[in-house]
Length: 440
Image (cartoon, rainbow, N blue to C red; front, side, top):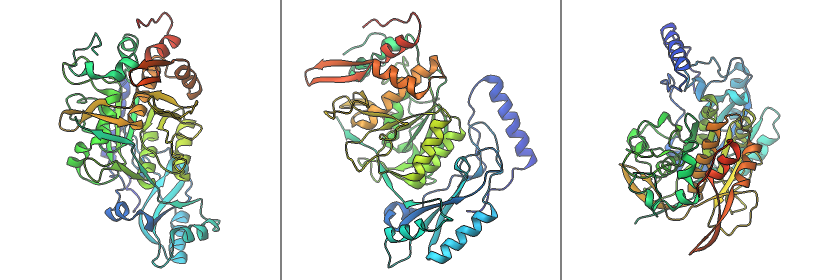
């Protein structure tokens, strides 16, 4: 990819004025990007085993910008580009190992230049990786890993205080004690990044909730708003409360950043992502100063993504990730700095995991509709919502304190399906906010 152009004086002045207006109003502004994201070529989505990810050193010379060298979310710009030394190394690697460059981007947060290479015919991916691991110029070399959402799609109690007609179907809202929690906090102003498929940001229960959208998969705006999984996740986090329609989200007053790093091959299929797309989204979430990152997906260990998650948590960002029962899938839930989430209904005995209901949960689907779904993706979204409720009352809570609050507020529920554990949002808030009370 060619280095991004320097912004014109007019664009720089406009961005500066936009930033000043945002800061004066104490809000987050979504400023249009001059440089589009690095998209994922269709061949990468259909034949990922033919590609590897390679990163080399690329010294930082300016403040971090978003992926591709353009800042987003606050109107800032960056001069971060591919250095001559990094470009020369990449060219030498391609020639020496018969690699074909497909896409590339500089990741300023890691001071690296990252390239997606196609391996040469007649060889295996692992063989190429082993050769590159012995090259001192290479900082990271890894497979183009695949990740997927873990939500099943299913078609298909009245809690006082909401006029949302489907609230009575939200057993998860009752288990999390959301109604009482909302008397203390609704997550006002907390910046939540959803790294997932696209989101129907025009859905009546989400309209006006999204501050920024980015798409690393394609340039298909219609598909972005038609994606089911990201819409389900966003709805559980932030669906509007007391708007006379639909459902209520756990943290209805948050500000959403929707990053499309995953795609759905069909309406009923799980979302699929890869190292290339998720890395870009994580880097942009860092630049946008997200306070919480929701990762409702699972996949194998991935050095590049783990480095970016470490950078995020080191900057104080809370990362909430789905925990898989499959030992092959360590990302993101098994990373020590991530808040791991599993289903309340799961029999897995993982004392480190936080739990929320995840079976037969009513949530949003595209085109203004609602439906039931199941899976740890949904539990993850709800815990993200609870974290946002807590951060709205104290934005300096670190991961360690949040872990304590979530663990101390986990409650047993006895149901016709058997007992299960779930975080209680109001109990967690009552432990944080002086004189806060929960009715139930």
